[in-house]
Length: 63
Image (tube, rainbow, N blue to C red; front, side, top):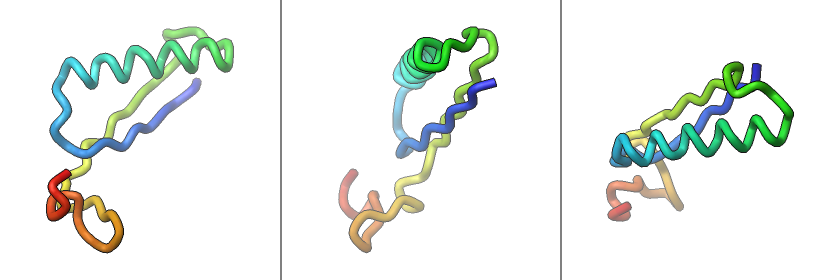
């Protein structure tokens, strides 16, 4: 059972997350010849204060 974990900064809409899940599922199904019903996608919404870039938080950088 293919399992993909996607880490994103918080703030994406439900529609954007649905699109990620759909496209990642399709890509995995094609790449590893797995049935779509067996593929799992987990999106981790990471708070901007918990994501560091070059020694600063994403929030401090305005991301």
